[in-house]
Length: 305
Image 1 (cartoon, one colour):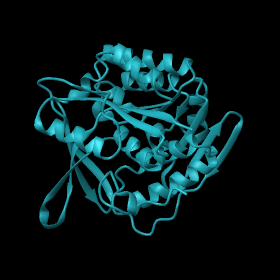
Image 2 (image 1 turned 120 degrees about the vertical axis):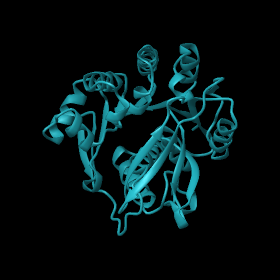
Image 3 (image 1 turned 180 degrees about the horizontal axis):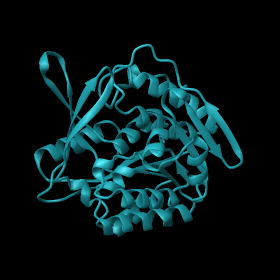
């Protein structure tokens, strides 16, 4: 059965460590990473598209070509004169990563300026993915536009997927951050948070509090990721837990959650149960964190069968 997954957000220029003190350039960003991994495991009759904005400069054209070269559609990426992609650098310390960012002129900050374009893209899609970073980079009025279109898509029966992916340094005000993340979840039918983020930024004292808070917002499905402890799934009245996959050596945790999301959605979209999808996604994420960078080549990932 054919379908379309649309991922909305910011792709950036990625600089990562290489041998000899050099840096290697690539392109990545949370929602693009999710689209990349979904593309690896969705059948050919499914399309995967990225909704964002870039500039008209050389690096923007390289980014569009890179995205298209990995099988992700670029027709919903706007071109904006005078803007360019943001850039980030990965710093690693025993496999754990931190980042430095340069994104003041990022074109993706204007990705929701045209509500009609957003609506058309969502209407043509079956699964729509966005994140807390998508919301964080937008002007307030554009956040309202995006959320309105997401609510419309949810009401129309689309599967709207939200990863809160909370990055406080992107938000000017913590109360506004929490309120906006909450509205993002309310606009979604499936929320995929990380428990560490929820306890740190929402003050949840337990997994139970995180589940109760999101369920109270009308979320149909919930996948709470808890690192090496695995994931807790709540779909309707059914609750289950799926353990993480064993990893001997962690090289780089960049994109662990994004790869889990993409693999999970691909397996769910093609008929897998939430539990089957989570087990498969855990294996994919385990493979990803044994390699450098956000996007790991298909031949280093688990088979999709």
